[in-house]
Image 1 (tube, one colour):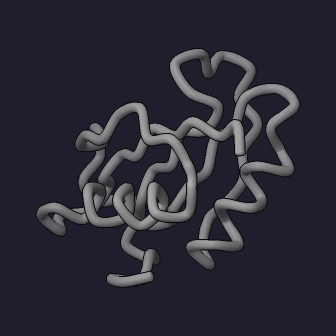
Image 2 (cartoon, helix red, strand yellow; image 1 turned 90 degrees about the vertical axis):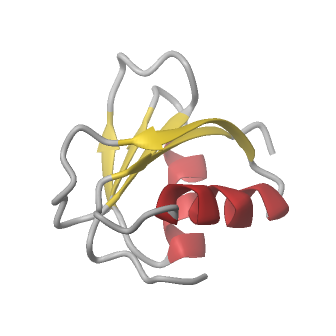
Image 3 (tube, rainbow, N blue to C red; image 1 turned 45 degrees about the vertical axis):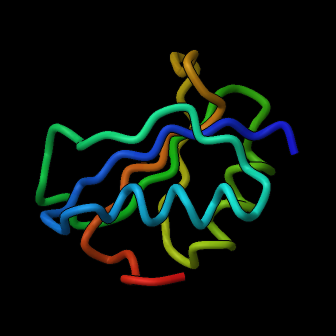
Length: 92
């Protein structure tokens, strides 16, 4: 609750970010944006979170079972920016 997420596709899997976003939405998370990441060959999924949002970022990491957590005080459009990497499973 209270989580807003931007989902970025850092892979070459077409529609992957939308699929993950839909799964997170079913779990009650608010998706504010879904788009491609600048890098399409991201190796590791990254979960960037704004100040005070670490517990919520950990909840997202637990749900998708991958992700390196990175605190980023500059995040403003959402609480969490999820950049999907090639280590992310195809389905959740």
